[in-house]
Picture 1 (cartoon, rainbow, N blue to C red):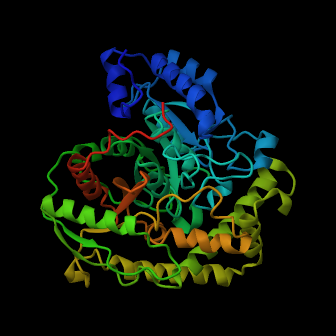
Picture 2: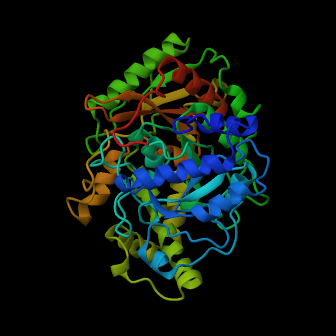
Picture 3: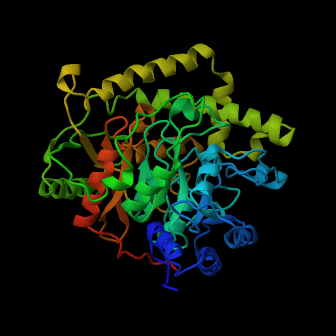
Length: 484
């Protein structure tokens, strides 16, 4: 069998289709890599090796990724009869098992993927680094003393280190794109409702959360979204249909696009590292070479100082609700403050004390702000500025050292979280698709992601451009210090 370690999921699926490898061989290879390497990363917090072996040896669905190993994030994507801990000690200790499959879990299975286990996440996914008290920190393969980003940090570490070719991820404020940037991967946050969160989640964080994957290639990102981007009846939102499968956008002509390079200072409260700015400038030059019209440009509403306040309001309300549901349905008891990390103690307290008027006022403000943001991509006849893409750094700095976010104490943790993400959460609220690409590397060898944002529903534009950038400035040869 061809060594599958650094083959992407598309190539591994072709090994199975051609008969060069069996699903069982691919699964055994991943088990060996996890057992050999993950002790240095703590990316995989729960293993289902025996179940994966049985599935790989059985009658797998004839989907596009039949037999390809995957890891699932330990937050969301529930599987009936299996545990999901949300990065907490109390769900882990209770051994609570989810009663139903999520729609997404069914789609992953129908695509032919075989799950090998669950990946490390921060508690309830409410921060941008993966350092939960319950499991210990996930470690960045490029420098084990650095953060993997969050909340899909375990997934990103596992893919970057070559343990699996693809892993499930989720994004409520940047949680696909931030770990992709920190670990040198491709991370696409789909348009709102492109990937259903049913049947258990109606709308997380006021519609800001969505699922996807982290991968090592644009073609994998496109093909997996084709497989999981199917709505469930009754979803509260509907994503605009795509003109054709995203896999067909890979290699298609980019066309003459109008691209704005971020030219606004996010403010002194945000990190603004020179390597991140250099990444945007380099990407602008690459886009010009691809035939795009590139100019400075930033939506006027992008750095409205009220945005963090109202977005955080929705997170606090959702955290309080989530904990109430867990107490009632999974534990049968109250969760004490001492069982939660300080950040989530605060969110729950704020959420419990919040009035309906406060919550709905935040939703109303964010809805009005979203319309102001959207005009930048809208055509002139709708009063817009007619841009096709916005290019920003993914985050404000290369991955920081583990412990940096909490080192200054609970009061400063929120400020440090916000300072690190000037550019991502806005597009969770607007619902627009955004992708982080590993197009730059700092002087010390750490990855620096670049974010591209398209108009609502236009993942096709993102995939076309991302594939062209991957060809112009390839990253497949990169290998982290800790890898399989």
